[in-house]
Image 1 (cartoon, rainbow, N blue to C red):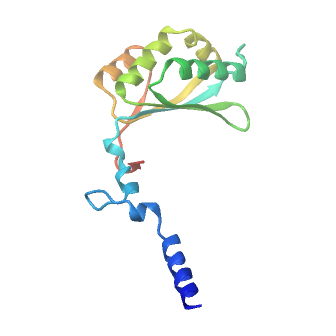
Image 2: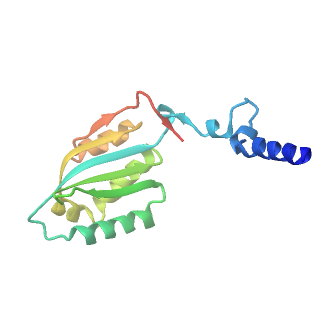
Image 3: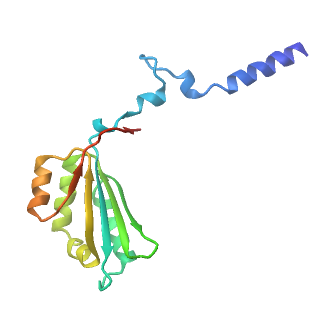
Length: 162
């Protein structure tokens, strides 16, 4: 009976220990902590675009978003996230895009402007607000400004990325 009690207590103690409690790196930080960095140290660039759906557009919203999303997925392996979010009243969309860095964001912008979706996009949507977060180059800012995009650039003041 005494051995059974020792066994149960040992089992309870070992079952409460998580993998990150056991796995330590040379700096005595848990494995989970080593995967966290300050948001301001990230090179990722995010587009958050508020769009009005043009009621007189001849584009089908669902078909268009499926086609352009498939295109980005196939051709832009540097794109980390790409998603359209439709409001309940179906009158506005938030487009969320995330790129590895400023160079990949610039390649996307250049490809978009010279590609088959540019005119269709602006037939379907009217931009209300275009916000970019993350470190973008002067070259990116010049390219977008020269092409008529009005962008609200925002730098990180605090936060983290896992």
